Length: 132
Figure (cartoon, rainbow, N blue to C red):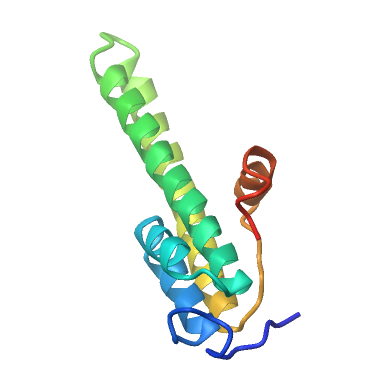
């Protein structure tokens, strides 16, 4: 179900699918910028909020996994098992994040709403008034 792709109903004058794509491409920062710039277009604001939460989740995951890996490095014997395991999990989940990021960019350019698995549901649950 594609949204109308026009610039008549928004504040920035940028076509809605392009503004949403910029939110998706520049996760977190693009979302923050367009959330405050765009006051009228619900499609752009939707993707801005999605971008903020997706980017925040990605950064938080990276921080947690990096911290766990550094902690595992100082464990005397277990680090031979834990570090490769953590690095593998870190890499696989980052690959999944990249796939979701790519899908989001495509969906925004097509003018469609799409939800990130788990992240979007948590966003709506925690901040029901934030997501248009």
